Amino acid sequence: MAPTRRNLLGAALGGAAAATVATPAPAAHAASWQLKWSPSASADGLRAFETLEDDRADSHTSAAPHIHATGDSWRFDMHTVDRDTSTDRQRHEVTGLRTSGGFLRWTEGQTWRVTYEMYIPTSLKATTSFTHIMQMKQPGAGTSPLVVQSLRRDGGTSRSGEAESGGGAQTIELKLPIDDILIGRTDLAPLHNSWVDVDFQVKVGKGAAGSVRWILKKGSTTLIDVSRGGVDTFLADRLRPKWGIYRSLGDTSGSLRNCHLLLRNMKGYQLV
Image (cartoon, rainbow, N blue to C red; front, side, top):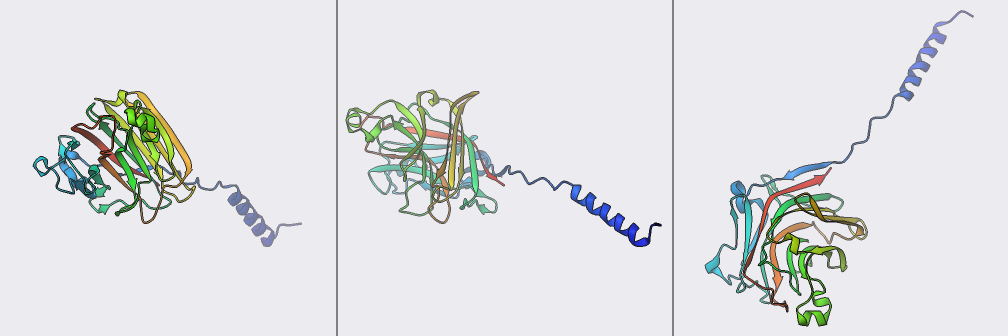
């Protein structure tokens, strides 16, 4: 039978359809870390942060400021006479990640990462009570931190006998205090008097939707690399990081000294 115009058109359309089916779909977008915050201590100073909590009670004004930029670092000074508005503790901290457009909001369902270098001198010791050098909190008064990076005597106040006698070895730990989940802990001694790389990652989520990862490196040596999924990392509104020295005066080991903490090369990333 001689080909007709209808037959030829049908064949052409069939071939086009086959070609369309055979074409592979575009590859799905692969999430990657996008740099959102990269302040300079020398250029931005304390404008790198959303808020400043420097001697809120004016307990030691002759030593002000307790938080300042020096060279390429941010320095947090703590003296044994310093007091917060709650006089059983001390606090000099900065909060949040400020940019030219305001500040970054870490909200439910998002995944964020902060990297930086920190220098902990031997004068900044672990204690039997809390000594936090990083916190993740909901903004506002009266809310507990969801994540803390702390310097704690192994055993600390959770073992009354050791607390009375001064606690155990000095450690640095990451913990979710509301749910009392210890993510990881390692000896503090290798960190003292050295620049150490910190890599903290958090997926902001309610109930079991959150996750965290915590990495500490000294040069090419990984001191700890731990992660935990299925955890709660959200209260309400948003999550906000804090850095500095926040410690209780309830230490029983005699470890409270005049001390300081240095941070540099701070960066913030979002997984998008």
